[in-house]
Image: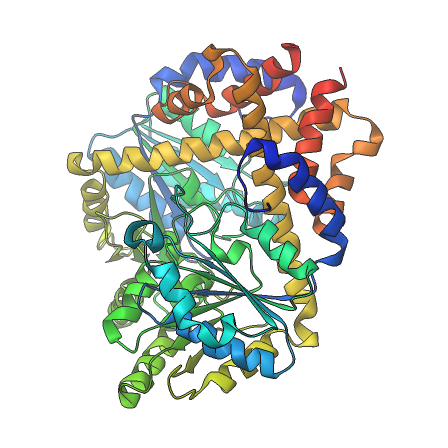
Length: 300
Length: 300
């Protein structure tokens, strides 16, 4: 229900969200991103099991745009998360994200809230870090873990594609294949990360080396998560959430206004036509904005 | 008039902008940013004179938030731009930016348009690259030059503060003081820049070494600007402008809507109160957005 984008579901969605909102906000919201093949699913499986061993209840929201093209990776995800998917304290929600060009589900924030209200105190959001969608992983979670293959070329690509700008932890995966390669990759990443602006004043991006096969380093990675969510960092995390809520509001405001214009205005005011006139440079952006607000106000 | 933020000036501003808009868009829009003391003003003076020698007409819009605290730097700017400020083909508009916490004037986009309509075909916007304001330099110009002192610590700070993420050219300034230091700084910057995502697919960030005192490298820097604005890159620059116009429209839409709510709605709907309830997490962002649009629509 909460994932639905059908207009007829909107009233029920709204009722549901209003009822649960006060029971939300208590989970650690962790994003896991990285290129396809970087080992995100197996990392979630092993990290998730450690979280559960520490007494947490875990929800995983996996949005994988690749599923739309390959048709098979969601099934693959479930297959790779065998321990988690059969554990009573874990909930896995795959989302094929069909028909959307963004890396995240349009209702990802709402889905997180529903998981929190259901009592999950760790919510992991998995996504391919395309970094090009309007809503990025950093807009919806507290902490971003970037999964990176132990391959010198790969992490430079990750930096170039802008993924590293959101990284609070970079996890070098598949260390069982070649441990010295993984160590070298982690060291290169550390010096690259020291050049990139941190998202938080009180958190410098860290690296971790993990193997989901042998379990090496997964406990250390979870310990880093615990450091990130330490009580001393609560203010910093809450400050980030305040900004996220503000941004969500402003996005929703534009969406609500444009939805109204779309359904109510005359065809001459078609929002698509307005957008192209603005982009073409034939209509001044602030004047179009004022006219939309004004004409809509007086057209009743 | 165009810089005014008084509500009573809005109708005339709007009329002015509508009249001139079709005569705008033909200038090269260049942003120059960098820490205080990095030599921005003298760089603009020397680069500007080269542009004029190449037959261009130059407008400089200098917004310096430091002026609000020191009270003197605008006068200092004018003093440092002596050749430019007395040249018939140059126009310098300092703006003290008092009372605003952003690094750019609120009406910077409109000011650029007015300069273009007045026939200036190069517009330089100077700002301290705080990178924290809502509207950043990269939102309003085509190309960003970052002025950087030849100091190893300085450019790393620049990268950390996020300035380098917007750099299309980094100009290492004051090379006359210590040329080998400047060369080393440029080389370090080049390797750092290769790790940062480029803003354009067809432009990798470059470095230049300049001395505004001896004039060394200023001609080369101008040649880089000419490369950036080469006819082959026109599509890429226009694509960037389309995105800028779209973003300007969405910002203006929020502003127009919130202005209306502020003037029309009951005190219970005070926009400041709504914002804090959203940030506190007591009101759901999308529901607040829908309610604002709905209640305002039906309150007439």
